[in-house]
Length: 257
Image (cartoon, rainbow, N blue to C red; front, side, top):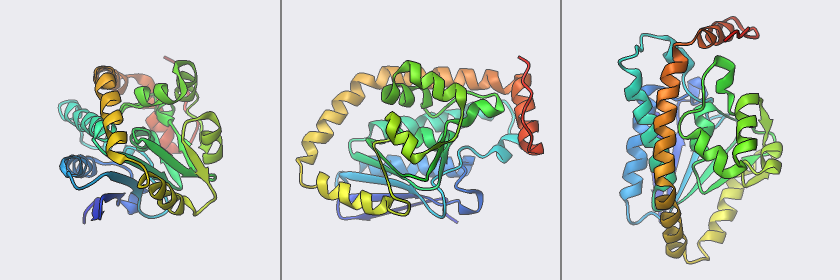
């Protein structure tokens, strides 16, 4: 079974997260598939617009916590973080106009990836959360960089520290996403946006994006490296272990570090 679906229609590539049995939670295999898919699409000169969405009832529940708890050791984890960094860097900087279409939940790593898009659309009843703090971790996938560029440093820190679930309407009001639309209407809004874009000089828009991405690339690379180092450190903390135990036991964690 393919965890990432990709189809190209004319000048548009549609990428679908397809691990519906786990709410599109990103495990190692799925991340590798997504990374390969993004790189292939990025190299395709016939594609001008890329739409990323989730199959089934949600966009993505984030990283796969069950896999995080399995046999993955500290030798494997840096490689996983490198794959996450590759996904963020590729999606953010690819020479295409990118759209993230969120329905249902977009949490943790799933939200970090979505925020790398040029246009982030969601539904008013979508549930968005940068919820790493709940298990004693920090955002990865460039989450710090993506939040800061959309909200500014002060608001970004608060979103990370609160870790609370926001509705799509709340996310649009604060500027975290570009548009929120009625429940069930996000794909219709994608079609409307694409119609708008295809009436504009797309190559000129892409050139501006490339210039901005090249300017910001050093900051994103630095952020990804700091996230990798920080996440490795957080995984060793007692607060992370308590967060995981509380998650499994379905209770509120008691942090003490």
